[in-house]
Image 1 (cartoon, one colour):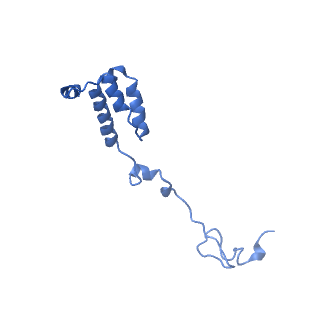
Image 2: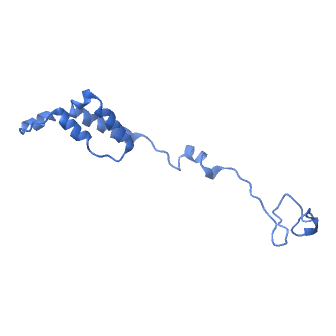
Image 3: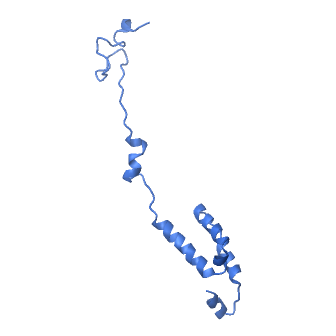
Length: 118
């Protein structure tokens, strides 16, 4: 890169070019942290080509890392949708619900309020 700039009579110090590359604002917090680490490395700052290579590697690696989605079997097995639950039926409106399995019609407090304990 330095050779390309020098070929058109533009002379920029390598460190200045490196900091201008790394000084661009980024939204990704992981990339921002990576840029801060690169800034502290003197060997990298002296070579702008190396900075561009490392940033490209970071972007390529972040694209290749899989993200978990709801359709992923691992994610689904831990989601709240697969929790076992028991449906409880209640008797209402003075009538026994035949789906209620914890008591019989004769023991139903809704149909027979006199059986309800005080």
